[in-house]
Image 1 (cartoon, rainbow, N blue to C red):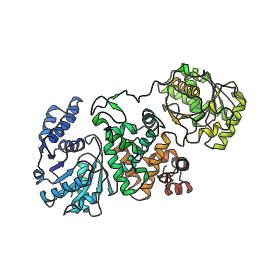
Image 2 (spheres, one colour; image 1 turned 30 degrees about the horizontal axis):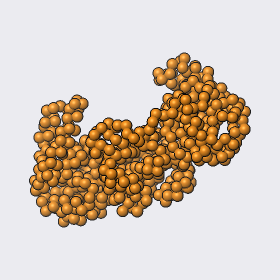
Image 3 (cartoon, rainbow, N blue to C red; image 1 turned 60 degrees about the vertical axis):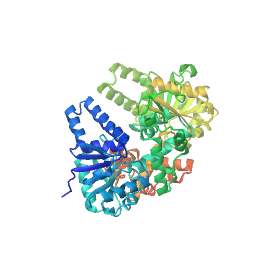
Image 4 (cartoon, helix red, strand yellow; image 1 turned 180 degrees about the horizontal axis):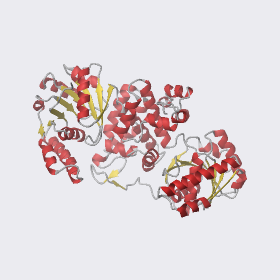
Length: 591
C-alpha cells in the first residue's frame, strides 16, 4: 500500500513554489512553506491569495473554502520548521549549487523516512541527490506552471531512487488529481527537452529577422493550434529561466539545438526578461501583466488594396484535397474561380467534392443555401491549362515534386497574361525554383494554405528575393478578402510552421528511439503539460510518416544542422510502409 502524506513542506515561494503549496492545501494537506526572508514570504503569500482570489471571483471557490485553504499553510523563514514533514519539495531557482545546499540542509533537519523532492525542470536529480545521505529517498517531482491549473507532473527517478519511493510519489500525484509520467533522469525530461528546442529555434528565427514576432506567434497558434506562440511563451516563462534551462540541457546533451541562441543573453543583459519585468520580446502593461502594448517593433497595418494589383479572376491548378479547398475558399469570398484538373472525370470529382463540402456548411449553419449557390456559381473547371489565360491570379496545388511544379510554371508563364500573379501552395519546396522556370520571377509568390483550407485561418505568404513588393501586397490583400490571417516570411525550407514543427517531431522520435519514454507518455506530456492539441506521435500518424520524413530531409539539406538529420526510426518505419493512419499502421495501429 502506498504511503500516505499528511504534512508536506515547500521550499521556495516564487510563482512555482506558491502554486505547489496551493495545490497541496487545496487537497487538504497541512503545508509548511519556507523562503529565505520575510519579504519573500510576503510575496509568496500574495501569489497564493491572488490565485485563490481569482478562483473565488470566477465562482470556482467559495470565500469560506479560500479561508480554509489559506489556514492550512504555515509560512516560515527557517527550514527547521520542516523537521516533521513527510515530504519536502524544493522550488528554488534553477541553480545546482543552491539546490544542493538546500538538500544538504534538509538531510540534516528532516527525519530519515522523509522523502525529499526537487521541482527542477532541467537539472540532474542525481547530482542533487548525492548531496544527501539518503539519495535513495530523493526524487524529481516536476510540476508545470501554473501548478494549480496544469495537470501534468513528471516523476523523475534517478538510478538510485528506491522503487517504493517512486510508487509512493506516483500514488501521491494521482491523489492530487494530476497526471503523472514517470521517467529517468535526463536533461529536460520529456516536455522541456522537446519544448525548449522548439522555443530556441523560434527565438533564432526572430533574431535573424526572418519573420516578425507577431507572425511567428500567429503562425504556430493558427497553424498548429497551440495555446500560445513561442515568443509569447518565452516571455511568460522568463528569458533568464529559458536560458538556464537551455544551457543546462546543452551542457548535458551537447546538442547544438539546445545551445541558447545569442539573443537570450543580449536581452538578459538589457533587463528584458519577459512578463515579470514588463518587457521581453513584447512590451507589457507593467510587470506581471498579460496585456501587450504596441511598441517600436509593432508592425504597421497590413498593406491595403491601394498597394495591390486588382484581382477578380482566379485560377487553381490541381484536383486534390488542398486544391479543392482552395477553390472553395476563393469561391466563397466572391472571386470567379476556374480550376484545372487532369481529365474530365477529375473535373467532375472536384465539382462533386465542392458541392458536398458546401452542403455540409449549410447543414452546420455556417452557410445559407443562397451563399452555397452563389459560391457554386462562381466556379468553373476544365482540363485545359490554356483556359487560365485571362486570370489575374493562378494558384498551383499539385503534387509536391519540384520537377512537376517547374514544368507547370513554365507553361503558365507562356499561357497567362502579362501582370498575372503566379502562386504556389507548396508547403516546403523553394518558391524561387518555381519562379526561375518563368520569365516573370517578380510575379511569383508562395501562398501556403493549411489543410483543410476552408477551415484553417493561416496562410504563409512567401516572398522570394525576386518577388515584387506589389505582388506581396496583392497576396496580403487577397488573404484579407478571403478572411484569412496572412503571415509574411522568406523563401527557405519549411517557412515558419514546418521549420519549427518538424524538428520538434523529429526530436520526439529520437526520444522514443532512445527508449527514454513510451510514445503514449510523450504524447501525454505534450498534451497535458504544454496544452498541445495532439501529441507528436498522434500528429505524425495524421500527417503521414513519409511526408514528415520528406520535410525533415529538406530541412536538413537546407540548414545542414546535424540535429535536423531525420531520426533513423522514422526512416525505418517509412521503409517498412508504416506511414500512419493512411496505411493503418504508423507509430500506432489503426482499425
